[in-house]
Image 1 (cartoon, rainbow, N blue to C red):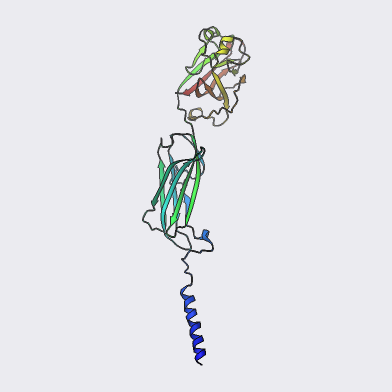
Image 2 (cartoon, rainbow, N blue to C red):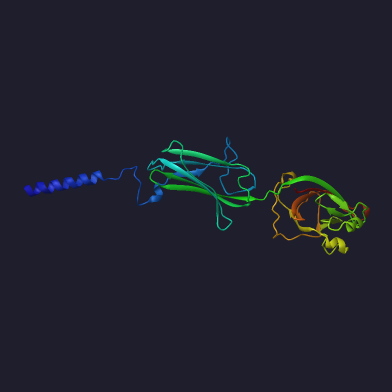
Length: 298
């Protein structure tokens, strides 16, 4: 009987031990760490709030970037949030460059939910490149979760100072040799007398580089400065083009047939710009001519 009582006591004691060690519903699950992580997402545009960057994006240098996050405790464990880490790293160079790296406690920490945002003002990012932006949330049990996106920053070449130039064909008295920087049109004799001024040549609804085989004057050909001419096939809004990326990999187009409304990127004399064919009267003889509206890098 004594033996039976002793055995009963041992069983009861073991039961108490197992009962006291039973996992609480709010405890992290060590067998599945990913199930314990807090939640985080980007703030995105809505009917009441706009201007947020919440996915990979391309912006021009100097443009402000508005980013933000919404975070909440793990739905199962309810573990309160502790801190938020923000990093912005330029990734297209070696070694990578840290632009921003901050760690702060979340508002009212420890908190069940947290929201934060950052406005990167104009001028903060001064170099074109690819920037990885990451928010990483930490909770009180050191579990983490993160959101990340890439912002590609492209050059803003400061287009300003628009002008216009009207050129005629080879038989026209107004000339067909165009200086894009100053919106000046030269006759052939004037272009020869001012070597190096010709950046574009017009004749019979065609534009070409002064170095093209169609140019028959050696002085003009030797002084040609146009290094790139590329038709733009994107937005039809000329006035909205504020940043251009005329990559050197794009071949120079020459002897190009143009039409009214066409937009072209160009590179000349170390500068980049854009022009639009505003009007065109394509014919032979003295009536052949075009007017182009020009913008160039300051």
